[in-house]
Every structure is written in C-alpha cells, then in structure tokens.
Amino acid sequence: MSSEGLWQKETETSRMSEGSDEEELTGIHGAVEQAAFFTWNNQYEDALAMLRSRKDTNPRFACEWAYVYVIKTLMSSTNEDRESLLGHFKLADSLASSTKYNEPMFAIAEDSPTDVLSKKDAASLKKKNKKSFKQNKKNAHSSGQLFDDSWKLECDLIYAEALLMRAILQLMMNSYLKGGINLRKAWGCFHSLTTIVEKDTDNRIPYDIKMCVKYGTGVFYTFLALVPANLMKLLSIIGFISDKDLGEQYLNEVFESNTIRSPYAALTLCTLYLFLPTGLGNVEVTLSRAKVILDRMNERFPNNTYFNGYANFYHRKRGETQAAVEAITLADKNAERAGIVPLLIRYLHADTLFMDQNWAGALERYLAILAHLEKTKEKFAYTGQITLSVAACYVMLGNDGEGMLWIKKVNSMYNPKSKNDSNSPKFSNRVIANPRLLPLTGVFMLYINRDLAHMNAEQGRRVMSELNRVTAGKDLSGPEAENMLLLFKGVIEKGCDDTKEALVCLRKIIANEKTIAQDSMILPFTYYELAELEYHKGHMEEAKYLFEKGLKIKGDGNETLSNRYAIAMKQLKRKMQELKKM
Image (tube, rainbow, N blue to C red; front, side, top):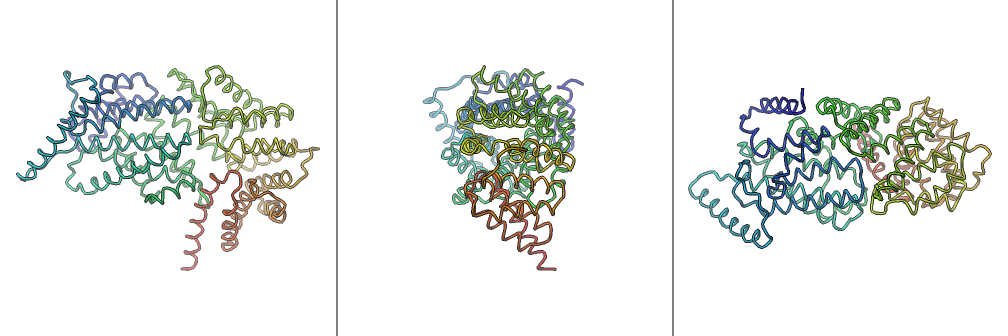
C-alpha cells in the first residue's frame, strides 16, 4: 500500500472510532494530518508540498511547516538548525496573533488569498477585525445564540504551541533569560486553554483542537520533569507547579487519539519513559510502556527514523547491544533514503558500539562525524562529547598519547551554545590538570552515558576486565584517581549484583571523603549509588541520610544528578510513609 493509502486508512479508522463526520477530513486539519504522516514517515518534501502555498498566510500551516523542520533537523541537532527553527515558529505565532479575529480559515478554497500583508496593513486589518469580532460576539449573546469562536481558539493554541517550542529551543541553546520569559508566557496560554477545554461539556470545541491543547499542556508538564533542578526552582518562583502524572495522562490520551499530535505525544512519552531517571523504581515498568508505543509507531510509520532511534535506547537500557545496533542501523538507513545526513543518529550508533566495547568500530564512527563537521563547518550539539569519546576510544585501544591529545582538544571543540555539551570541558580540564585520570576516561564515558548502569552481568565483567587492563601498571595515586577508580568498580559490581563488593568499594570512598575535592563528581555520585544500595537492603533511614548528604555536594555533573536525587528522595519518602502505615 502507498504512503497516501496508509495515511487515508488510519485516518478514516480514527475518525470512525470518534463518530465524527467525513467532513472533518477536509479543510486545514485534513491537509495537516496528511502532512504530519509524511513528516514522521521521512517524506519531508511531500509534507512541505502540502503546506507550502499557505505557510506564509495561514497560522496552522505555518505552525506545521515549523514542526516538519523540527522532526527533520532533530537528526542533525546543529546551532544553525535551531536558529532557523526559532524563525519558523516566530512566523507561526505572529500569524496566529494577527489573524485570530479574521473570518475562520479552516477551509481551503482555491481562491483563498495568499498575499502577505505589510506590517502596517496587517495591524490595521487586525484592529478592524477585532472590533467586528467583539461586536458579533456581543450580538450573539444578546440574542441568546451560540457564538462560534473556534478560529480564535485555534489561533490562541497555535500561538501557545509556537511560544513553547521557541522557549524549549532557547533553553537548549543556553539562552535562559529569553527561554524563561517565553516559557512563562506559554504556560499562561496553555493554562487558560486547558481551562476552556475542561469547561466544554457540550463538545463544541473541535476534537483536533482539544487534543492539541492537551498535547501542549502534557509536553509542558513532562518536559519540565526533565529539566535541571535549578531551572525548576526558577519556574516554581514564577508560579509553575509540575505535575508529571497529569502530563503523562494527557499525552497518552493524545497518543491514542490518532490526531495530528499523536506521534509527537508518542515521542514525548518515549522521552519520558527512556530518559527520566527511574530512581528507586523498577526500570522494566517504564521500559514496557515505551515498548508498546515504539512497536505501534514503527508499524504505523515504516520508514521513520525517530522511533527506531528510540528503540536503540530501549535495547541499550536492557543491555541488548546487538538489537540496539540493529535498531540504530535501520534508523540511519531510513534517514539516508530521505536524503538526510543524520548526525545525531550516527552519534548514537557510535555510542552503541562503545557500549558494546567495540572500541575500534566506535572510534571510526566518531571520527567520521567530526570529519563531516569539519567539512560543513556546522556546530553540532554534542561535539565536545564526541571529542571526549574519541579520547576514550584511544585510551581503551592502548594509545594514551593520542587520547591525551584529544582530551586537550575538547575546550576548543565543544559547543558553548548547547546545553547538551556544557559538561564536556569540565572533565577534560580535570584530566589535563591531573593526567592520572586519563586511563579512567573510557569507563567515565560509559558511566555518564548511563550505559554502565544498564549492562548485564556478562557485559559488566567484560568492562571490569577492560578497566583492569588499561589501568594495569599505571600511576593512579592521589585521592581523585584512586577514588574515581573505586567509584567505577563499585558501580560495576553493583550492576553485577555483587552488593557486598560494591559496598566495600563505595564505603572506602566515604572513608576518604576529607581528601576528595568537593567540586569533583566522586562524592555526590558515590553517595547516590550507596544510598540506592542501602534502600534496596531495606535500610530506609540510612538511605535517607546518604541522599540528603550527597545532594548538598555540588560537584561536576550536579545539574543532571540533582534530578536523580530529587526523584529518588520522593520515592523514598513515599516508601517510608507506606511502611509507617503498616
């Protein structure tokens, strides 16, 4: 069956299940649904062709045009792409603001105006239309008639969506002031829209709009469950209260609705299930939820890249490296068939080989990405991480000299405009200041990528053997090198279920605490790992003490680790309350 046939079949099935009229397939939402299908199926030119003629005049088309590029450029994740996306969403929110009092633009007529007005003419027309809109609304209420303001609601929604996406992009680019301001505005918009939707007991609001509102609100809640704790504190000050459970509920409803935001909701849910730390919980629970979504989305969009890419993370978190390689290889091939150079996917492919301890294969792929970036002069979001990974590969291959050369390149190669790359120079600077840390670089990368925590016992034993090999005969004297080695050995033993040996390693670090620098990663990560072990042994008070003490130490990696602390401490508090009731 052709792509168009697949889209038509699934859309008809969805609408039949909602009991909606066939007319709902016409107009802008029908066109946008087809464009959304093409987008997720790696048919970007087909999607853009559906939207091109009205992207400069119709806010819904402008918004979806921007979303096409969101999906297309996530694979490259460059500064240039993110700057371009800001412009696309700015156009969408400007159009939404300027046309919300116009005559409804739901229908697509052949003679629809496509001319772009000047700013002066647009402002004048908006003022005139707003006056007419208010008068018509007043007349309708006076005569006891219902007033259809669906178009204004649609425009308010588009404005909120575009503003939220701009805020997320700005935060990802370390522009915290602009991002914070836009995030606050977007939250106000979605809060108002959600209130309107909840009051619609007569179902006057179109189903598509309701699902878009729930998607935006759900993204807001779940995205903020993933942000660093220091940013969450700022958002709490401006009045935002996170509600991950409600956000997850909204997103699942949107995912099941088969509307234009269903695949976006699916991707957000998978991000939540695969990347939000599980803390003291059972990782298999969230992985099973992700698996249901991934299977359905990979069937629905056979040529997609993202859900195959997320399947890679699913398998890595289960220690299934061969299946992870197969998933990321398919994601890469699908992107290449669409004419895209998927830098992010290729980076993940290299990381998967690194987790599989295929050091030479990983090195070849990391270097290929850097060669591409050198040629194109693009600013990739993870360049510093890749540079560190290259150094790690050389170390694991026994070439410490080349490894140190690459460590020294991190400061000049990392991306200062990318939040994803902000921690790269911190570790490289420590190695430069203390070269005794160099042999630990390979296992350090496995640890910060969270691959070390998800290895099975056989993989863990292989890593331990590799760690012993690259450190044999090396000078690891001094508190930082000695205790970092103990941390990594303790974590490996913990993953291999050798709790006794893990405790020995981690408790040695605590005994050495006074000799360890407070700004190092060692102490906060050690306290976290030790607290988890004590929790699973049933020692709740001891776990509480360790979590509270470790949280106060602001070492390297604190932004990421503080989220894990916050989640684990909430779970611990809940567990202790349950035990008191027994």
